[in-house]
Image 1 (cartoon, one colour):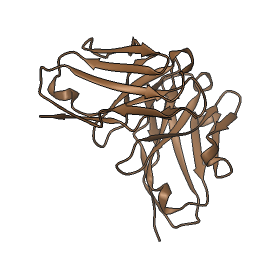
Image 2: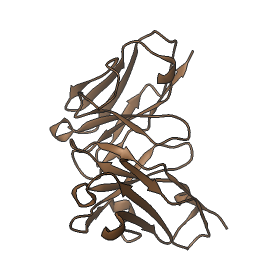
Image 3: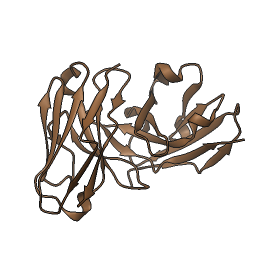
Image 4: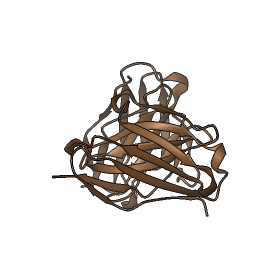
Length: 118
Length: 108
């Protein structure tokens, strides 16, 4: 079955780091770029960056440069997004999404809620 | 960075009516790489339209996209009850990929 399954909700304190996983299945892991997008409560969607699982190359939105790291684990077909130095404004649902045949985001994970609170 | 502005912010219509949603870009979208997504409460977005006019797999033909350059439109020809949701436009022609703020389509 073609799907993306993300890890569960997290509660973190300010200054901490969080790592969210996205396990892929049903398609060739190395052939599809993967994106990370977040959505703060009641807000719009915000693109964070992209990883090429085949080559392990990444590109991040400037806003997150220095705080975000996207990685992959080929044996488990899983991509990860780590965000460090968390602040309350990072409270959001984080999604992974597949880069489709026409470069649209054609498949999404179910989302992972990250709450940053002291 | 390309800023996308969606209008209206909220659209109140009845089932059977026609919905017209607008997305305007602050600069031309490369190769008309403009997508539309539908999002229902508590769920991830779902792609409807790619490349400004291409309908994604499984999307009903009452959804259509048009436009080029900086002005894009999503039309839902006859609203069904399940169409009431939030709609986002997105440009993926140049990094950073950006989204509009969304249009809420609510039932009148």
